[in-house]
Image (tube, rainbow, N blue to C red):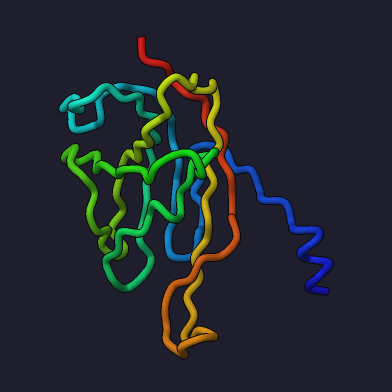
Length: 160
């Protein structure tokens, strides 16, 4: 059965923008995507960059603060993009740790490669995390990566 499931993985559901996604450790709601050259802080970077920014809402469902959201929300093609930077919408500053059960609005910004045109639509993949009381290697508890739980296609708003 395991070989069959590996050869025929289930399709990842496509979710509409604005729908809440249960990713185990997180509730994630993706809103909009846009392109810009200035991050949400309003301070232009020292060298010109093109940023793809995704507005979202998240809720940390674990019992402790954490900052691993960049492993849960990925922008295709993730292998070519550096790790995103998160900015809290409430103060336009870098997002650090997210407190448990405290909804936060934030913007994740990926630096887009120079010379590569930004598509009209981006696909965001939300990967789940699962809590295990005992893992298989060390017998310790923790949150562990799981398969993607949803994808969201967002139209990209272009800067004038």
